[in-house]
Length: 356
Image (cartoon, rainbow, N blue to C red; front, side):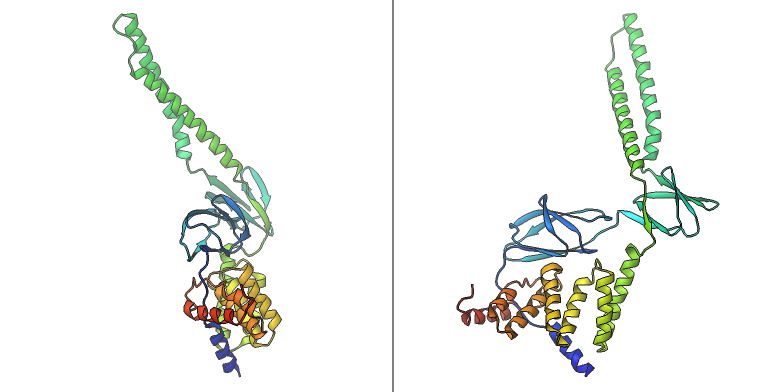
């Protein structure tokens, strides 16, 4: 029985499909999920993963941002009649650290108890040292060497400019000549260096204010979450390959509920829908397919979800709904054959007089 269910699942995951030509579109997927978007400096209401439809043909500027991660700027080119796909792995803009061996963290001029807490430190370099049970985290300003050098360079330029001016004035008093062009140039260089020094000082002041960490209860973060979600996905796939649908369902359910931002979530929801289809839980399966097709629009699973919904509609004698879902296919993953689905669409159109 297990082998039969497994074979049915494999066949259903490898279905066939296709569509009509769509307007230029772009899939945007991120790891982690849930990033916000701006397209050509215009905010979008959707979060990743998402299929952006109706983009004009040509070059577009894309900004992807999410709290706790560095914003990513990309230039993408959209081609008429095609759907492109990009996947962005977002880098954290901070580091999460805990200090279980210490009781106090000293940073940015403040002391904070470390018991039962983890700290999100702004990205950058830190010099760590300990004094008894206190750990010190001294942020390292990247231009500290320039800031140290700048006043000495300014003092040198002012001294040379003053000396040059003194020599010029002496020569003029002796009627040996006027001011040389080097003196104004030296004073101008000193003024520029002074402005540079003040700009560096101001940047360092603002940088120091941004070094204050945030903190909260100890929890799984970042790389640790990625390791656990990946392990769950691999475990679910192994159980699936062994024909254990019940065990795989339990692991996939844990994955989507405990790690909702994990990159594997769209695929997990799709597999849950397939399992529920095989178990005869049609309404639950349709809801999960819609989640993948309409909300978690990942390029790898989007077409398969719409094709599954089209199959449900055909089984329920709803050709208009089947047509709608078939026409949403993008073929971006190469999973379906366009000509096959095009023929299916033509056949449905002929048999559905009121079809658009």
